Image (cartoon, rainbow, N blue to C red; front, side, top):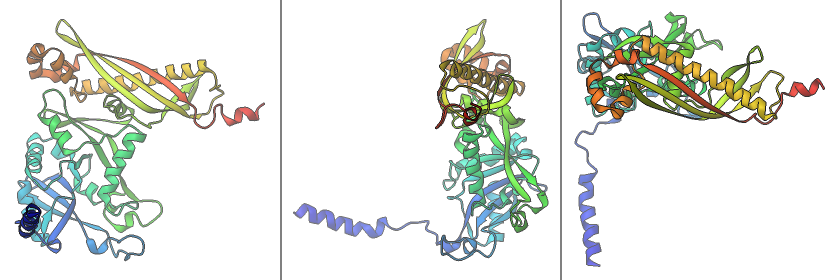
Length: 404
């Protein structure tokens, strides 16, 4: 009994101490940063854009106050370092910048092509204890990072949320983007075995309207931002882009391909059958011939038929086997064209170097100093196994019955 009383007394005495915080800030003194944009400066190394929430313009949900303007503002500040740019931004904002809610970093392609600028900025982000390492990274393609960060959205109150959700959905549905956060990106930067990539973003429509209410005031959006290909890096800087179907192989090899519709040909007709992978698994092995790596990529996937606009009997096992073979060749082509594109750019974005390191550490010591060159000359083969599990809630196309 005495022990319980003593424990209770100690907790009571320590509560005021434990609840205090030495660096406490009032919310009214903070400017909440949702995203950062990094552009190349004129008089300074950087022009940093800070997307800041405007609480008075954010609706409080159903029955809340109607906003009187954009929910965010974008403040641009120059600096030779992120720290200097942040301090200069304080003069404009009049509040302490608070980064704990930031979930997006937009880097212009001009900064991404300059290794010193890119690494200098990310060094600052990796050191700041308030900045989230899970913040996603995108590369602004042929536009300023400020433009991407300034774009308003009709579907999300916080525009950066639209971009992060767009990447996630596009990764699943199209397989042409990939979600990359600060930790993923920096791991690729410092690794000898794998190079980093990031989703590219462009402005579509009237660029001069980006950031203004006019861009979204009509049912047809006049200015918008959208994902466009993958930025490929080598030795700490942007070296090229992958566009269109050439990007899909990255998701196959990363085990991220799911719910992406593949349009298949059937008996001479183009794109009449849609196959949707539900579960996929990839693995890569390596063997050596005269110290030259030879990679074998194996893909196993199963899925269903989401659309069939051809006279086909989906109850016939032979027909399903034929679809599986066509899908297998389609996937093989997808992967090989992505690999060949990466080899042209001499950038091992797949982590094949890691396979070599694990399989033959002694040989890896010889190859790692010039690994991207060896990767570009490596032979890669692809083996695909496809299983067609079902054809949706019906089997044969409905119009087949109409012709009977």
